[in-house]
Image (cartoon, rainbow, N blue to C red):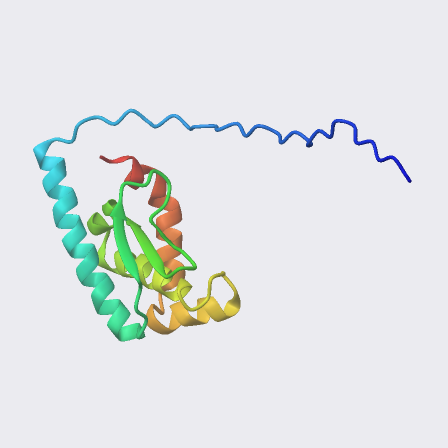
Length: 144
C-alpha cells in the first residue's frame, strides 16, 4: 500500500488591488446667473439634438449636457451623447456642426471617409466650422 503524504498546500497569493482615486477638482458654487445660463443652454442643446436626430434619422439613447473642460461633445458606442453646455453660446452653424458630428458617430464610431461623408451630407460647410472651432476652442471653453 502506498502511503500518501500531503504537505501543507498553500494557495498562491492574489496581488492586492490598489484603488487609485483621482482627486476631484474643487468646484466653486455656481452663481444664480450661471445656473440660469446652464439651464437655458440645456434646453437649446436638447432642442437642436431633437431636430437633427429627426433629420438624420438617428436616435441617441441618452443625451447629457455637462461642463467638460476640453471637449465640445462626445459619443459612446452605447449610443449616448454628451455635450458641453457652452455650445449653446456658439454661433448657430458651429453649434449645429458639433451636434451633427456627434450624431454621425452613432453611425460611424471613427473619423473615416465614410464618417466625414455623413457629416458633409448634413453640414456641407463642416471644414470651415472645424477650422473655426480649432481657432477659438481655448478661449471659448475657458469662459465660465
